[in-house]
Length: 137
Length: 465
Image 1 (cartoon, chains in turn brown, green):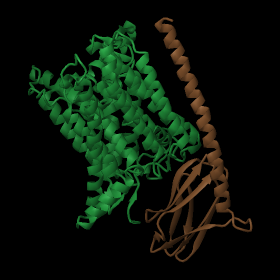
Image 2 (cartoon, chains in turn purple, green):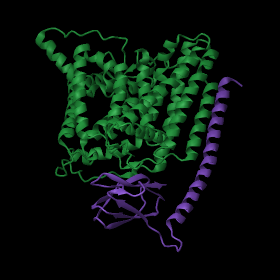
Image 3 (cartoon, one colour):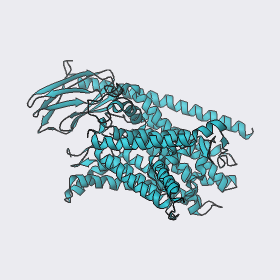
Image 4 (cartoon, chains in turn yellow, blue):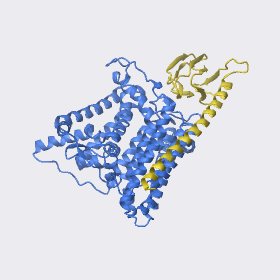
């Protein structure tokens, strides 16, 4: 076998191994993300099946317990409530949804997770981040 | 601590999802397979040392290089710089609604890098400082009847001023914009003031050392974009445009001292920006808290902590490269370590470019929609102007799915790795006439490249987690 043939064979072998790895690893990935999906479903649904709402409590203009983390898969319904002791505007970036909240009032967000990525919600006037929303594909 | 809140880019409303574990594993495996294949499939004669430049059509070339076209391009460059400064000073302080920040740090800083790597040096004709410097020089020659005299540039300094300047630009972009222990991002006003200061500094240096000399060694943007342009397929020679073998021009780029520092600074600053919200986040927070407890102000503490880690990234990337160089110098028949250090610096340019694409590709695609949408029609962010009727346009975040971004990121790193290996092998063959010794020396560069590429993949997989 001359060196050119060896190279062609080696090249084909590389491609074959890479494709095989891709298929094997990607299958793994899929089942893992399905597991996550099941988890998030049980997380977001209450015991009686009715969806339970995450509430972000704002005290002195800051989120209690730090920035809230919410994770959804694409297509699910994002739902959360903000209870605030200050009046401000809650801005869900990326989705670009703005809602005013009164001091001592609350406001509810309910929208489909159509955009993939990591987004933040903040109290617009205070520039205070209150939520990190992750939407997986 | 809840008061610490890093927001690296005040510009982006959407951050990339971390690359999933399976894609990380696949990418890393692919890198290893490709690397071993590269070892077995090496060629025996250098192929990239000669760029094989061929002129383009005479008339086309002459038109593009003619004085009116050069003056026009220069004027466009000066206008855009001036307008950015104006927008920064007079426009809104909301970073995402002001033309200045997106234009300087996304459209120009990333755009010229991306297009230079494909086509060649596209920044040179538009460089506002070069245009201004040449105009002033030309006017002087006309009035005085003689060419202006310059100081001799200290050759030992080489490209070090640009390497340090590159770190300074990134420092300004991602570190300086801290306030009260919170990274709120650079304000448009500060950006405009920095651009003005840099303009004065650059014009002064050009007056001292000459326009072309300073562009080759010290002008940050010329050197930085010029570095990526070495990969591109077009170049000018003796006032004529021509096609050249892509990648080949890079083989002579690093002969100027300090070039290795420029490419290392590029990799390090991108790494730092990628790592500060993921891999390095905890370490930065700890250092920040420790500094804050010693009584330094919160803003100073955060800037200082970030600066320490950015410099650590520079030292770390440099160290990995130096280990590779030291390793190669142990192979029989090796040139002196000093020559090796310069001789292989260009092989890191593709890696630096891959890092850039992996970390900023999605930012570029999303933010350019803003640039050519609402920022074009309402550059000052006043909400009252609408020059082109696009002030109400938003950013379509659906343009790129998370999967598309992941494949581009991993693809860029793998391709950058292969190109880097190709250039390194080529250089080794030209240094070591003996093919076996050349291959032996390349175990070292292979280790360096695998380290950089896998580190890049790792950064993506732990991004903002």
